[in-house]
Length: 272
Image 1 (cartoon, rainbow, N blue to C red):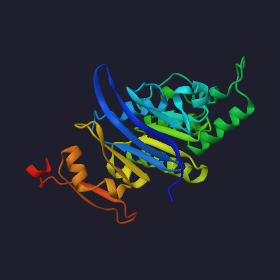
Image 2 (cartoon, rainbow, N blue to C red):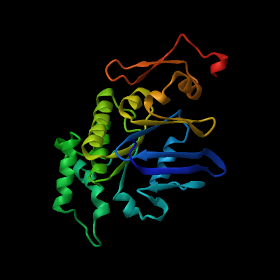
Image 3 (cartoon, helix red, strand yellow):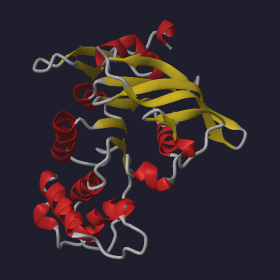
């Protein structure tokens, strides 16, 4: 049985100026599930995440978090429920631990200027969970891109959110850090009941780590397919949306879909 939705995206249409990017987008993110948004570059995936986070106002539709429209919730209310990890993090000249402690700001009381012992304990705990406990005193602009991404995830987790939003958490990372980050997210889903919505480009990673996928079509500005990975990652769906010849097999270990580039195949006119 599908759990009740933590997040509901209801008939969202969005864009910039007079240009529409996405139209009539509706789907739910069930409690305790990982849902990944996939699609070609320029589809509007990041813009959709910005709408979910309340930083981009849609032309129409609404975002409902835990049964309440985000438009009537304050920034502090949202930050106590939802944490966001953005892509392209700037390397800041501050200590990793100080950066992670930023995640506790939504819980500061009026006229509170310093973190509490609980704040520091949470920061240390989630740095350890993320595997960066030994980097607490290192500068954010002196650690690797993968370590910065793990610090951003630790910062988000110190908010103790029920809902985690990630924009391309594996972008520009080597396979070691990609797997490390996604294993961590998956483990937190299992251990803490965390609900996750993320944008990810790698279709095979999306298949391995997601409970459900939402495939966006750039040309139509709509959802092309959504559901379990095996329902969405079909050869027909991928070739239609990405205009790239592929074959789809199965990962011999997990049984999840596995997408291969079909260099010799080409696209037939009927597949374009």
